[in-house]
Length: 509
Image 1 (cartoon, rainbow, N blue to C red):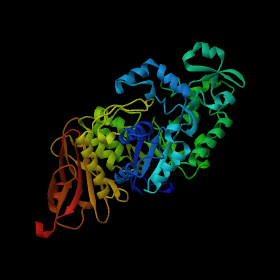
Image 2 (image 1 turned 135 degrees about the vertical axis):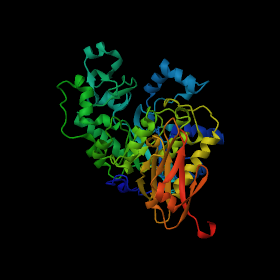
Image 3 (image 1 turned 90 degrees about the horizontal axis):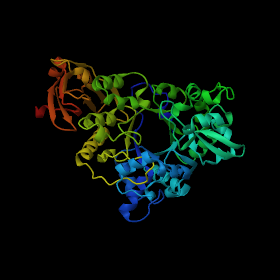
């Protein structure tokens, strides 16, 4: 595996290779396959037809989420937490204890769970993907471990510890553990903007021993995959970690001069590194050694009151480099797009399916699933395939292949008014090769919008052109008309055009 095509890319220029990623929620996915064949399926026995199906849809990367051994204590907590249990009942009516696998992000050890088929199963899946030209991405969770991870009792100083007084004052923030050093009060992991995650133990990134141990864990994972999706990667940054934990670290653990990530990524240099990152720290994580970063801002823009203007600003921005962004409208942390973006799914899916960078799709997204299931559940409720959503994604994938988005040149298009002030709601861009011209226009807003697009300078030789929309009709334009006023488009709220431009032969005019 060679991650180099993703490195040092100039902003907004070209995608060096097919860049569609499919995230599979591994445990529920295996359960679905098992029910389909009426026999237990592990990663070693996934039917070839399933891998072929994934390859046929053009995915070059598969992220198997949740393969690692989950914490038994975390599972116990997942069964006893009333708030989470209410979600089980809402999303999986009739659930039983057997359906609760525990959180995929409460890891007991970096070994595949038995349900996955162990190391043999994981390596078999990687090989099955590799022969189809697909690379395997796995989770790396640097911020925390389960409380029953072996390090907690053997090496408690690898974790953030509080005093007995801290634990008495904030009992929900700690778990008291009998370790080799005696009873210790281990802090629960957290994002500084949210309450603690009660099932996980917070690692101490100002302890050099912790950093060395996590680098070693990363190297061991690297032997079994082609890339890692690093959970909440920005929490390891020195200023973020210091701001979150200084109150407990006090003077015992001074801030380190060096950052964690440069040495970590250098320890396993052949991996592709994808950072889950928020708070406008995308470029910072790229500078820390990541090849790709989440672009959560795009999804947030769709939910803003001025969705059209915000999406357009993001898509046309020079920074961060577009080729290094992972664009998505749902994943295991987000609401299902068929539900949350109802009425505007066409625009959102068209954008994610055709923008530069990694085009990131989640298990069930293309089938129109509407139920977001907690990561603690190992089984999902049955939902019928939404034929209209599936047809939409089929058209988008076919268009992406036809337009050769892997190696075409990308550029945003100028949009002018068409008699009113709605044109700022539109986002438009083109992909061009020597043989093809594709023009994409979307309206992320909640009202119709219209405008004129400047496309004439991108047209191939010819006097007349058919703009053939993969989502609908075809429109014929002359070069003269396009030079005079531009390509006129009008889109309803949440609509999109995916145009392939065909030169009309003189015999057809």
